[in-house]
Length: 173
Image (cartoon, rainbow, N blue to C red; front, side, top):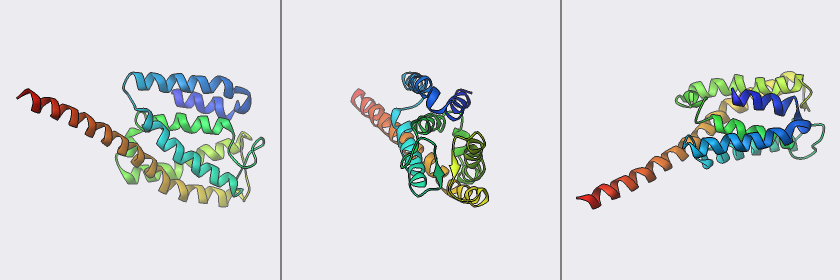
């Protein structure tokens, strides 16, 4: 629910609402971190990957934004950070199976960009059809990568917790 509201604030509000949405995203992620729901690395590594992909697509002219020439606008970067936080929470069920993550990537992620185009948040440098097909292929491959990046962080956390626990247990005997 929170990510849906953030999406609306970023895509519809864009530059006008980014100064409201950005602090809310920071507060939301801070709450998740304080409650030990996620670690900050689980947000920023997938967000960095997504932002890099969108930056490259913007640089080569696939995405065109009204107020950005080379890099995506700030509201899209904030949106990526919020989306990355959902990979270990509300969307974690998708990451358990690569094929499910790939199907969702092929369908769900491009729908968001196409909806953004319908709301005049982004335009495409190529035909709508070619862009849609390209986004489907790209995100079918890349969304599982984002889940993998998140799962690597979870494994590191569990490994470090196991190390701490096993050291404690071994010193108690």
